[in-house]
Amino acid sequence: MKKLDITNRTRVKRLPKRASYDSDVIYNILDETFICQVGFKINNHVYIIPTAFGRKNELVYIHGSKNNRMLKSFETGEDICISVTLVDGIVLAKSAFHHSINYRSVILFGKPNKIVSNEEKNKALEIIMDHIIPGRWGDTRKPNAKELKATSVFSIQINEASAKIRTGPPNDDKEDIDLNIWTGVIPTKIIAEEPIKNVNLIDNIPLPGYLKQYVRK
Amino acid sequence: MKKLDITNRTRVKRLPKRASYDSDVIYNILDETFICQVGFKINNHVYIIPTAFGRKNELVYIHGSKNNRMLKSFETGEDICISVTLVDGIVLAKSAFHHSINYRSVILFGKPNKIVSNEEKNKALEIIMDHIIPGRWGDTRKPNAKELKATSVFSIQINEASAKIRTGPPNDDKEDIDLNIWTGVIPTKIIAEEPIKNVNLIDNIPLPGYLKQYVRK
Image (cartoon, rainbow over all chains, first blue to last red; front, side, top):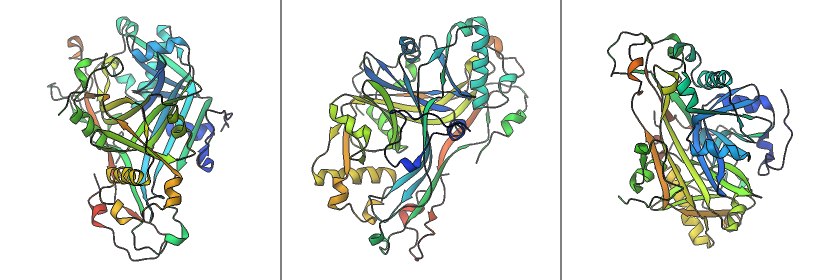
C-alpha cells in the first residue's frame, strides 16, 4: 500500500476522519464499478460526462469516439477531475439533521495522456474491457485498423487522489436518543442480473463461463 | 411535457438520436436516484463532488455544511454542472468496438440560487428528504435554529438540461453476425434491501410503513 501525497485539491476538509489517501483503498473503490464521471472545461464552462473506464496499476483508462467533445478537450493539456461514487445505504437518524448516506467515493485529478500507437491503444482497450467484464476481451472480434482510428484512448495517473468513506449507523445527538423514531440503515447496492441473450440472433451459442460468474446479487 | 431549449452545452452531439430535451423524461431520471455529481470551479480548477439532492417541479435542491468548499464556491455566481447517471446494463456485442452500456443520464447547467430564510430552507430540506425517502420528513425531529444556521441550501433551475438514453441489444456490424460469440445484455440495477435497525438503541420502535415500501429488488 502506498500513501499518496495530499494536495490542496485532494485534502478532505469536511469530516477528515472519513478520508483515505491509501492507493489500495482508492483502487478497491475504482475496481468495484466501471462508470466514472469526468469533469472538464470547454470555453471555461464546467462539463461533466459519465463514461466507462478501466484501471490497471496506477492508471485509469477512458476511451470514446475521436469526435467526442470531452476527449477532444483533453488535448488542451488541462487537468481533469474524475469522480467515482458507490452508494452503500441511506442512514436514518432521529433528527433530520443527522440523516446521511453510507458511501465509498474517489476523486482524482490529473492530465490525460493520449495513447497514440495502435499497440498501446489495443492494450488499453483490453484493460477497459477486462475491468468491466473479466474474460470478455479474449472472446470478442478485436478492433480493426478503422475502428482503432475512430477511437481515442487516454490514461490518467492515480497520484493526486483521495477516497472518502462513510459506514455504519446514524450518529444522533444524545438529547434525541429517547425520541420515538425508528433509526437505522437501508442498505443499497448495484446488482448484475442473469445475462439476457440477444434475441435478434438465432444461434445456439451457450453463455460463456465468465458471464455466469458475473451475476452479483 | 415541456421541451427545453437546446443550448450549445446541452446539445447531444454524439449519437443525437439518444437525446431528449423533454422535461418529463429529465424529471423521471432525476427521480430514480438521489445522488448527483456536481461540477464546479475553484481557482479555475475543475472539481466534482457527489452529493444527495431532491427535485420538485423545475428545481433541484442540494444542501450541506455552510463550511462546505463546494457550497461556498457557489457564491461566486458561476454556473455549475450537475450529472445523474443510471446504469441499466452492459451490452455485449460480437466486436469489442460495439460493446456498450445501457444507461439513462441527465446533464444540467445553471447558477445555484442560495436559499436564505429559515422557512424556505426548511421547505427545501423537506423536499430533499421526501425525494430520498418519501414519508420520512414527518417522522423526524425537525432542524433547530442552530442546525439551520449550520446548513447551506441551494436550488438550481432545470431549464438548461438534456437526457441521454441507450436501451436494447447490441448493434453489431453485418459481417460479424455469424461469429461464434455470445451477445446480449447483462442487466444491472440499484436495489434497496431490508432496513437494518440501529443496534445501538434498545427500543421497540417498529419499522414504519413508508420504509417497508422502500425496499426495491
